[in-house]
Image (cartoon, rainbow, N blue to C red; front, side):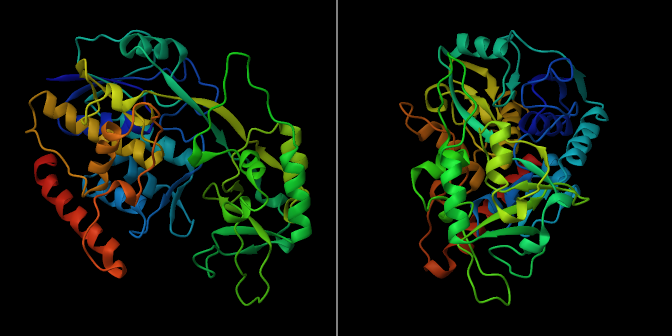
Length: 430
């Protein structure tokens, strides 16, 4: 039986291992947990979500919705677990992260084609078919090994949003609903008047942040900026982003700003502060965020935090099939490859399993075009500038445009993409 080494059991590695195993490949899955934990990981199960608990919007009006639909057509096991562990969050696919991690872990442990080895990998055997999917928190030892192979390593900083206790939220000073559906009860909205927002903004911009180590240089990813960094750019930046206001149903007045809370677990006992990733010190998070009236007496179940994320310079070192240019048997999956986001990481894991099967001669070589979200991700990694490469979420700008009236353009792009994916499936799901 053919054998592939997969390093890392996060979103990408788990998807990759399950996908290869489904096609009869023997997988040796290396995961350093629980022997060794990264600074951001606490759950000993695999596929742990350390930032948000949402896989973003499911609507096909959004590129991330199309990407999820393409993955489901291709039978993504990780996304199936996400749907099985979903909690209500409007049009977003949010999950109970503990149940989700447990579900994926059980799939991996119960698969006869997958051998799990709980060990940190510090050396890469360049002679064997290998997929490295150790994520943005790749251990220092393995990161140095990858640096030896590529001769270069990049990083940026990512921040986690706080999680609060539902019972400590003053619901009398909040209301339910979301920006797209006033009838929704999936979000708790904490409104602020102009005076309250002004005070909150002033305190946020001067609050104390965690100091970086001497050797560290902060390099934030624009798609996930700490809330205090956004606030310092301009008084209204938050009001145009995570604190954008909207009217409460059956109310005429518009709040000046709104802080949203999204359900974190199925029981509804934990809520995530939406878009409030932060690197403030813990005492400052308590002081500043409690200035929001509904959060005056809030209890934090997890404070926000910041950590270094690693990724390689994909346009310089990767082919369009996620393999290293100078080592075609070594593939890079997940955020380490330069994709950004949960769904994108799952997608890269599935793509790497496809490309590995093609490399091994088990599947005929077939590519997805930039008419699809999956093909667009592959294309971005090799077409972006290597001089200032930044990780990228899937978005409509990466997908080939279509000549159609604006009113139906997205629908036609979705139809075109899914037609191609279904044709591709005839080869992939065999």
